[in-house]
Length: 131
Length: 131
DNA sequence: GGATAATGATACCATATTAGTATCATTTTG
DNA sequence: CAAAATGATACTAATATGGTATCATTATCC
Image (cartoon, rainbow over all chains, first blue to last red):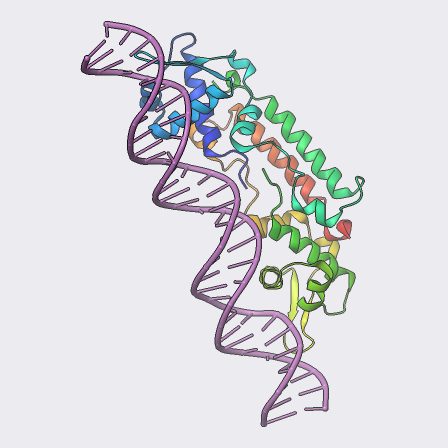
């Protein structure tokens, strides 16, 4: 079972690098050199981060990206949500079948508890703490 | 993100049903009737549980399965391991790339913490508690 | 002993998700 | 206007998940 997929991983690493450059625009070219990841894939990821509002992009020559938010406000849990969908561990088939009626069943309680814990832990990790 | 896949779900439900019958042998035929799951898929799952040592099988006419262990000793975490591989959240690409050297990095610590929590919670759920 | 009803073993297929590529349009700078 | 960057979008490859199909083997019961 994976908690974090490759997109999320790449995204986090790229954001760290961009954060290090602070207000200096960082291009894909530069990121590929430093982080050794496939260029077209990275481009796609950065475009997604841009659309999600975590990056600000600059087109044209000397273009690139800067963070749209302070690095301390970009949380790992946000990246997971963007690339892996909502963190809803209890949206599993399990519940629906095994205990379709009660909210009080043991399993659902446990899974809700796990989810809260995972969520709060992932929310406590941000780009600053990863740099 | 899913915590529990369909195999695991089916397995848990089948084990509950088999547990209810206690020492009476339960056939696939009976399980399909009661649990409404695809017969060939269920057969595969039961064969896996048998090989994993959670079930004892009886071949031939009137054959079927009984639990190989008391239901209180069959844990949800075991089923997850069998059908979804080892519960190793920190085996993600993330760590390897971002902090290849230190064991002391924040992310790794957090992920190890999350893993321990998830593990202990899932270990506290067994077939008895699901029945 | 043979028909029948069960599991064992194994190979295959379908779909979804994940990972990655390719291409062309658009924008900015020099 | 050429070059260097991102925007948009469609496509492909690999892997994981969910499910089928088939034949072999075994035990029971008549």
